[in-house]
Image 1 (cartoon, rainbow, N blue to C red):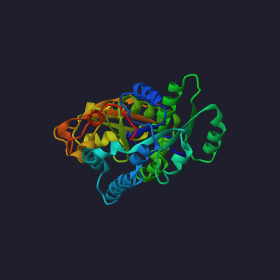
Image 2: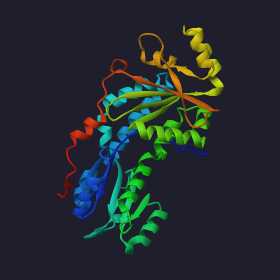
Image 3: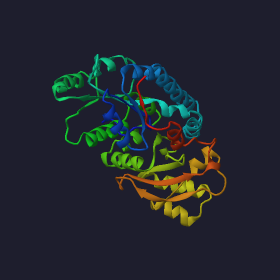
Image 4: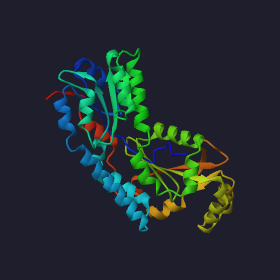
Length: 328
């Protein structure tokens, strides 16, 4: 069974190319405000935007690979990811999904998409009624990830649903990269449908970016305001060992019993890896889809807990200005 949960998720630009400027304006108004949206009415303008995009993806993938290499050498991933978020704000500019109209003057959407040879993002084709067979063939050949008929009764809802699904989907290459950091038992837990669905729903509600980590086991997430949070995951079968560790770390007998019974979790490894001051933090447990297998607890990281200040995603969105159609 494959992992459906994305192990390394971040926002990215959704790019639209359509010669119908009124339709583009409508899309700019209805797309969610927390999405980075770029609008293009001419293929030449879109092509200029995408120049170098595969190289930028490769550079970011190399940064991820370096983190994993350092983890193999004994450096924990949690502080590395926090530094990555602090030092790589340009990651938000990577084009994540392209939505391209099939019928345009002098060209068609598939011809445009074929110019993006090494770009690894998602591809959506907008089609008219006469183009649907072409779109079906393109989908079957793996040239596009989705096609949306323009004549659909509620095209905006259908399109946003497709974009949300693609935006949250696990990227095969990125998931393969980060899967090696998880132990087989952890992968097995994340493959349980109820747990994967609960984690997916939680991340969609609360965070714009997250990474699944192995030790400690959990999800490091960031919200749009730049707030960082640690969702610690603990298999029910290991609560006894965690309770012993809590006792050895100086937590009182009442707290140890609360850990052993699955009522609270201590963030012992979080304290160690980030060098947090003060007593070890504990938090009440949360249900995460399968109460017989897994429990969880949420810890919020303050500014003083981070190795470097994080540039908030909402500040990045504000710096991009309005959703103006680019046509030259």
